[in-house]
Length: 81
Image 1: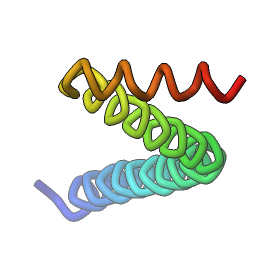
Image 2: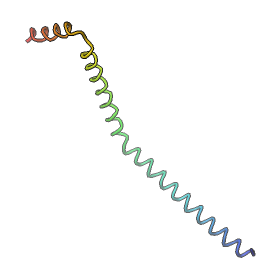
Image 3: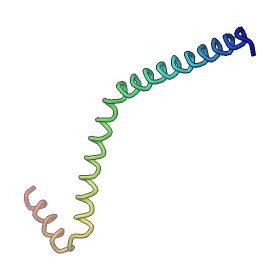
């Protein structure tokens, strides 16, 4: 190949690399913007998961508790009203 042909190949390679880098930067910016926009939703979901875990723990305790103690607690609640 002559010098002119190498120059064309070099120019095409530079343009291709520049296009790839530009697309990568734009994609990275969009990902960062999306993550920033979803941060409040993430915190809300984490709080909801924590609350659900607490409720499941209470239900597990009730399910595994002996029935006489549960009956006593229910009766104590009825007596308060």
